[in-house]
Image (cartoon, rainbow, N blue to C red):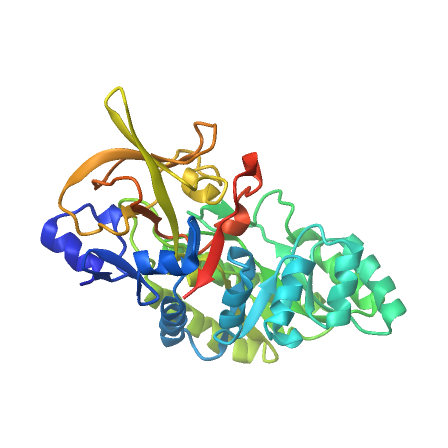
Length: 418
């Protein structure tokens, strides 16, 4: 039985359960395994589990709506788990990294250097040297990087493959995090791009294109389409100043996933239609260019769950607290401390009792000595006891690697790909 069927038939809260996972006798199935069996196989809680089938399905869904001319890249900052990156490298057309550490993971996973790009506002000289030696595409984000790359190329006797990350004069409307427009540490302001392109040409770097990333976590297709159109037009304006024809145009991402009550999944159809029109234009206006979209959260976020075990059940002045062996040190996003202005609950359930009709209002807290260690605040969940398993959905992106796992010296969590 799918969870959506359960919600409809028994009127459980829609926000408490996610329809990408099935149930078997009341237990969540992750990677085809019952949750309690998976927990026994992992050998400890807490842990993250990522479902291979869901990852493949998400890429297939995108392939069906994207024009063949548009390449799909995975932004591995969303989830750099090596096994997951290895799987994604075989499903997508390229990997986007944000550090030399991520670069090593991508190369170890078998991604071709030709298909790897490296972005980030504070690349150290050593990182740039590794990038040039690896022959990956470097997204230049400052004039300083041009000078450094020129010196590295002279030392290594290798050309640096470069693109220019542009800080545009527009934002992605309705995005969770705005990465472009206004004053930003990312990229180079569009007004300065002609001078930067001239510097790149005089430095003898191998210019390949532009990278524009206006924002992230957007559920409005019309906003994403508008940003893509503006990014394309901006690249078209800048192309005549470039020292070589544009060979790659990274239009960024911004595709969001639903986390909270009332949010709906992103409609891909208008985005695919918009990209098809842009690809058709590019064949004439930028004939040497390949269009790229760069997605992280959208590819992996819904395929992951965070699982923690209840170690205590307490009642304080009438309020029930389920104390689990994990918390914000493993899943900062779910605690509300990773960018939320007003804290909202991630979708949560009791994974081994997901079809129970006996419900109660509880708060799920972790073992840390801080009131911030909160995974669910006054949520209606199936009645649970010590040893039951709490599941946080939408946990495939910005989970383990985006959390302060050393905080208060509690044990780290495991990650598995199933």
